[in-house]
Image (cartoon, rainbow, N blue to C red; front, side, top):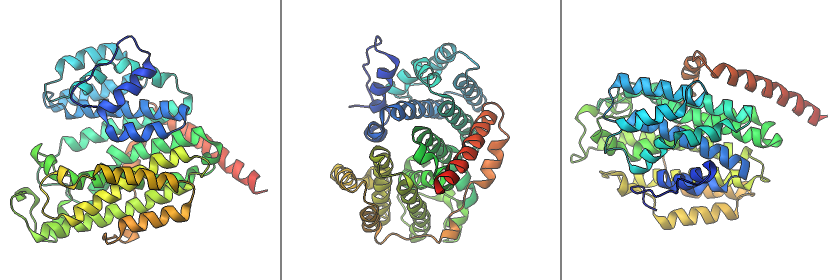
Length: 391
């Protein structure tokens, strides 16, 4: 199904619209989200589509930085029920350029549908999604306004960037999983410890794969301090000039992404085997990320993301093997080790958490306070439940 054309019947229900637009805006999530249990599937679909609208706003080149920020703030207000979706969608669609794909334009036009679906979710799900969108819109724009070919100053800045665009999504998914299952909810604290790292592993993989495409757009998300150690000035980087120092820096970051993906596997194995759909949702993403890292590491002279894209046969094999072993933790660990064989691996101490970013997010106004209140109550309830179970 092409991402460059979209034909969806306007008379369908909101839920059917979400299911039909999803393959047009993400082939990967169109594969993984349907693995989830029905109620959870709807919430995750709504959440992903809202995040995609935020990305569309941020990526629109026809908007100035001030206009982008204003639209993101209004979009946050819409998601939080403080502004009407229809008026924002109409204004935003008129400002979208030809650079925005037809499917993304259609999603913006139908923003009201996705917002209505989100409003029908229960309090815990809705609060988690609102918090995610609020923090993402703030942080994503903060980094986009300072993007340049010089890269990010430090590895800690990469961690913060990954948290804003991906880590907060991992935390949201954790809350959605916990709201679905009392058994998963009992493991909330352990899952939250790994959630942002899981997401950072996936995001770092995408950053490494898309490094040359990002540079064509005037952005570089690689940390300058890592490449300076290897004699590389990111501002002068060119795909036509291979440098062993650049490959050395890439290997260092591959090692970090690999370490985060090990945390992703640990996160996945905390999901009970009685929830195979949630496990598959996680495992397919982790498996494909590891295979992508392996292609990046083995193709040091690649000049486009398409050159390190995982083949369809590898995607199919990943789906088959992980599905067969979905309830078998030992086999899943062996599959991961086989896929990751030969990849560099950063020391655990080098895998930082988003502590500084979380502190910034805690000061964000609006539904974040409601999210924190609900999460605090649920964690307290979970501790009492664990204690009772132990008895």
